[in-house]
Length: 262
Image 1 (cartoon, rainbow, N blue to C red):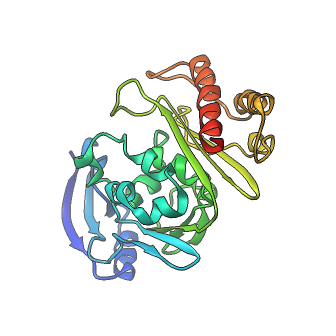
Image 2 (cartoon, one colour):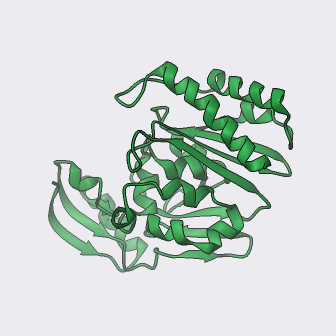
């Protein structure tokens, strides 16, 4: 468990930012599901729950997802499904259980850059941008490669687009972390592919995606499946070995392409 000396439910992002930079031991509180598994002492816990950041909103040309929105909201949102297909729903629905998804927040998940994150994998194929209080809007792929810093994740923005999507993952048990995960999308400009739980952090595979025409044939699909192993590195951990993940990568990419083309 973690310890807090003080707790503050802030009234503005400015207040939260000031508190965050007053002391290195001050911390932004998300859903607390991962923090409580640690054993750290913090000074002030900063609660953003009163700032209206728990909404999924249609902004005309984009959909904004507040940092305090929970994964269950993403799972059940018709706004997300109608604009981006099933990829977000299918990414978050296997995560532990409904009680967990009712607590886990978008901001806590994305800011933590978890390598096993199903959600981050899905968001990478949707041209997602991260809005930071100090850093402004940053493409998600760039944010994942940056250092965490002392900033506040305010929301995610996903541009509306004519798109078909698919999310594929393999788990040893239904609610376990993924052994490997793949997200794919296709629009008029082409394909996007991302893979997570490699076991390192989710990453897009733009060179592999370029190999796919809008409606690929069997040979082109096989070529893309072979290319994904060359483009992205895979490793070993307690859930699976490098060779096993390379084999799974080809299977998940092929299933995702076939799903979108069906």
